[in-house]
Amino acid sequence: MNPLSETIMNKFPAILLALILFLFTGLKAGVAQDQIAVPLSNPGQHGQLSLKMITGAVEVSGYEGDEVIIRHDSQHMAARDQDETRNGMQRLTRSGRGFEVQELNNQVRISGVSPTENISFEILVPYNFSLNISLVNGKKLHAEGVRGTLELNNVNGNITLENVGGSAVLNTVNGNIIATFLSVDPESPMAFSNVNGDIDITYPSDTQFNARMKSDLGDVFTDFDMDILNESGERTINVGTETISFSINRWIDATVNGGGPEYRFQTLRGDVLVRKGE
Image (cartoon, rainbow, N blue to C red; front, side, top):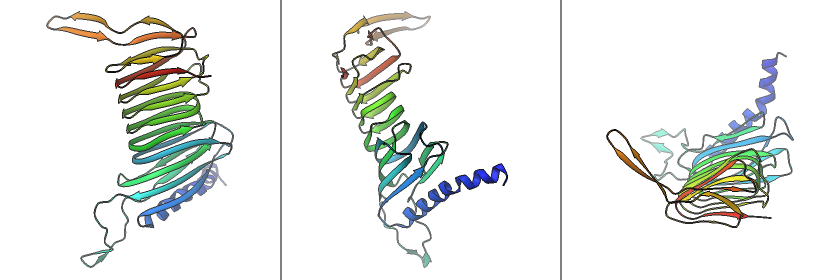
């Protein structure tokens, strides 16, 4: 068997699994409940889960296993009734149903979720897994017990992390950001931003980082012993050839435990809380 054929045969079960899942959920009317187990190409090694969708909820938990377990509960949101016939013609499709799952070299990607589908995912991943998840109207976006690079976006909804490790970049527009880290990557920067909501982050007490914090219409709180480099309220005036611009610097820059990578916290309407854990 040539290398190309061997590769195709090795990946055929995953491809077939994605196709079966898409067809199965597509033929269900209304609500679908199911669970699938996705085997990894390299069990025991680092992996990543990627997921992007419009509406729904996502909960990811780390566990001692070598597969990604995906549980889902979907509700179709089409406003109009889908009749089986129209003008004497039979319906062959069920628009907006189903999704696809692909795995390649420990990279698990969930895609193809219709904008008219409201799906709640409960996903188990090995502890050593990174996440790249984006929602628009997320009822919930929660992760716990994972260690890796965590990139989470939820335009309208909260983001919560519980007992995680590694680094994080978390963004919302309307929602709170709450995270508790048991460990951090000492070399990686982090960033947390939203427009309407609080940012509440807890780190181990010995974490070394440079903090850059800002709340335009709220306050900044911490119980870390921070060495403040500058405080908000500094004003600068730039005079150009035709215009004069004024800017007010509301950033607070500080070092913690001697400094390290930059951790940025920024909100418009909310408070920033940087807590010291155990």
